[in-house]
Length: 189
Image (tube, rainbow, N blue to C red; front, side):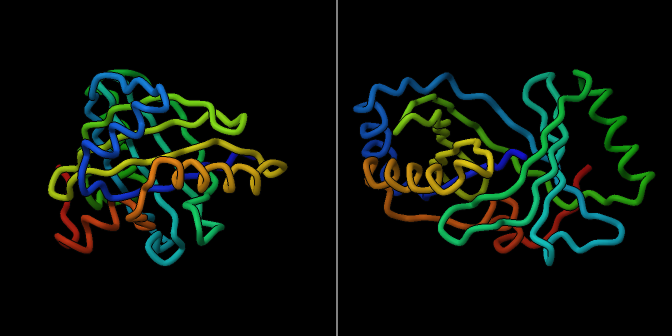
């Protein structure tokens, strides 16, 4: 069973954070747009169960992702299952239609520009993402994929890297939760 161990931080001064990331030798790739469509379950309240179902589009690539409830208070650790779908807008639209026919309802779309970089810290492969979120601002996310056997070491390594990068404004809520608290639910088209 794989877990996503993540820590997210608001960026006040992007130049300082980006300088700290560059000082480690991390090269952030060019920004890519990610469009995340979130859906509610017909029988379970994902807000109460702390789960999420997301359809992500990156260019022509489509992915469906289930995120389980968080299992940790210091990091955003949860089970994640992400599966690739067929490429292209039509396949994305068809999958939205399938979900809708099954009783799922669109909740909100989160748009972001993401710059990714890879780094090895304490023998863990870390994905570092700098995100610009429409209507929210700029964030940095640190993420490691872990199994149950190394989960505690993974969390400790992630927190250690956050300290090394001098990241000071942690955010436990997802981008969806932040936008919904700021804007309220909006139907996606």
